[in-house]
View 1 (tube, rainbow, N blue to C red):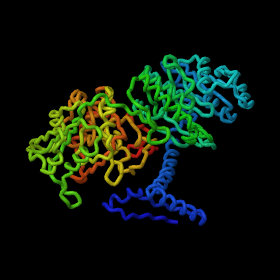
View 2 (cartoon, rainbow, N blue to C red; view 1 turned 90 degrees about the vertical axis):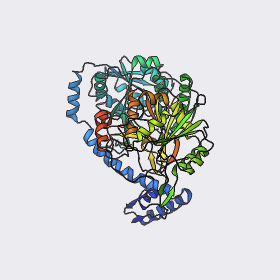
View 3 (cartoon, helix red, strand yellow; view 1 turned 60 degrees about the horizontal axis):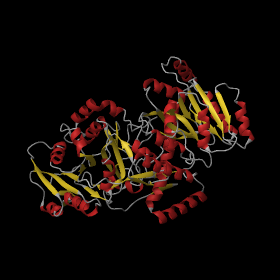
View 4 (cartoon, rainbow, N blue to C red; view 1 turned 180 degrees about the vertical axis):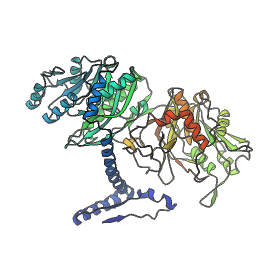
Length: 626
């Protein structure tokens, strides 16, 4: 059967696919199944509109494609027997050969899963480990029987608690038997990859000061098949306050673990999250190993199988973040995020700092869909009419002719400055930005394209939340095309050349890879179409480099900010429409700019810490690179 969807939505034909993601699917199914599916589809369309149905269809297609890519990836990256033997030999020549204590709390575990868990440790290529099993008063005799089987192994320590105290209590009891310099956390029904501890020690020999390391992970279904890989970003403090993304494998230096206070009772279900929220306050030496070293078993009723399987874990997570907010002295509230398992730490604005809205523009009417329009006037009106934060000024950087009367009408009553800049030189966006910032009075600068349209009143406040923080150098917004497609949710380096917008042109309802389009994230760069920085940061790094007149000036600016020790943040709570290309059509990138970016930033472009090296460099959609 072939199902073809069409649309009568107005707009350019090239955008029509965005309404339903251009699906076309062909398969053979029983007639009864077809009737059932069509009835369900019709009901879904009536309830939620056609977009909801198309999201489902697209997800099914994506899932099949991702399975195939992951299978290819595993074939290439899973070490065979010979490779593991080489690792065992190399382990003997490491300068650092720390003992790693693998701590596993146990309670009424299915014997098959418990045995698989223990054997995954015994198969480790790195030999200097001990397994600290702590039974939390299991009532299943078969669970205890498995533990008795392994007591004879001198590398395995088994402790039996007289009464059940919960996972935090059992984990701490297991820690009391541990003697390793580093501690690895392993759940009682999960498995370590055979090269897990080798990769950790290999990393430590290059980064001996690391206090905490986390790896990528995947899941095991009930048949033992690997699935659902999660390739994570490098350490991202702001992102971590939205969700517990580091998860497994987690390895921590024992001394730092003790300083942080180990596990706390009352946070069961989010005990690891609570621990890392305390660890990040005693060390910033938190590192990511971009390899799948942990297999999380998807059992019925487990969090790995369904995010809402343990709703009390969500409550514990919120409590852990609220505790962090109090300890850190943040004036903020913890709110639910855009999906289950996500949070929003909404900071209150300190004082009423002036924000300078810097708008570079040609200052002319533009032809859009055959009509002359003053996009800048419309842009200004949406800022004035829809922005909740009221202490801002406009700095309009126009060409020599200034701005048309319609723009001046829109600016009337606002605090503003209009600059008429020389036009006898080649166009240089960076020069325009620098001139405008020089004329600005604000403590914060927001670079603002003249074809933006405000969607939600809190956009400026949402950006200011992070711009006011001393460790943050730039904040980016969520930009949508007028038809709802994603235009910007952060930039990833080394993708499609120098850099690309993550999930560019995907449906605006898309959550992105592991919800990255709907939660606060750290990136290496964000677009200058809507970018906020403190004035002191802008001045410290020297503003925009005028050797980049059109392309890459924002990427270069962000990388210099990072080089100066600041972080870059994307917030989905600042949402605007971007009428990109209203003033110009497709163009090729500046070759000289590409070469200069490569010369300056080649190493980081090839190894963006916030974009996993196991993901494609050909497309901005986070698909797996086999």
